[in-house]
Length: 328
Ligand code: AQP
Image 1: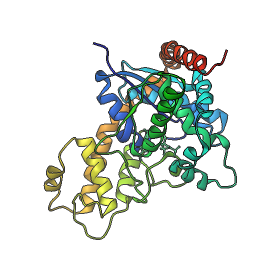
Image 2: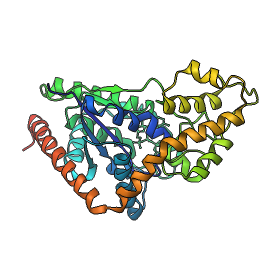
Image 3: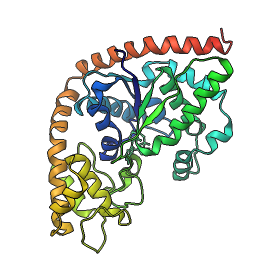
Image 4: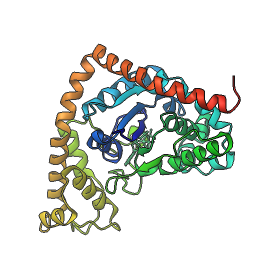
């Protein structure tokens, strides 16, 4: 039986954190057997914000090792810039996408506000590259966190537009968004999404998958809550709700069980239990990561074979799209 294809990507823009893990990567790993998976470290996306080239190279390899450490085994894993058809198809899609569609993207608005004096054209155009990533592999599903939903909708519109104007070519992809954990919030400010870039200048914003047990405990203890001291899944109390969601995603337990487990306990005790759970779940990932990053040639050979497999599919799709648009 032919499995449906899944594509997703992650940017090597900083330290991969619990939000990336619970919103996306854990889902990739847990459902790996159900699909024909293509996963990509999207370094060409990363340069839509200025990067230090040396750091970008290192972070790219580190993130690849981290994805394997999280448990990916049978997926096609590669680095985006190794398959040039991503940027080539990105250009074709740029030429059929109205500016108005890109103008609506909330992530562009958020990210450009962070650096208003240096807004790069690549940041504006980035959703087209993301559409190309997905459409190149004729992907059925795209497992992502909630912040990426709008970009998937754009990829769907683009596929529909291309198929209408140039003939049936692309599969119209669907997002796969987790019920729980699709939007993990910052520990310092539970009204803001946990993000790698915010973690750079705010030490208590995120929990990185490579944080040591001591750091995890410290960050959990400092996490913003409220003064009610009641451990309930109450969306109006964003801080405790966020911590409980992390607990639920990692423990796999139901909301009711978690609430009754902590019914007579205070925030202090809950935060220590949460830290213990995070430490326990991240320990094997950390250990496996340290081995993988230590053996660069093994890592490079996995990535090379991933890129070769990806390229085989990507070349065919790009050729088909290019010819349909009349390019020689
Ligand atoms: N806070 C989050 N909660 C749930 N899912 C999240 N994702 C990101 N943040 C959260 C999901 O992680 C996957 C990889 O994201 P990405 O690295 O490609 O880009 P991003 O969404 O822009 O992630 P960051 O951490 O916010 O990075 P920066 O700060 O560089 O922009 C995606 O599936 C995303 O939905």
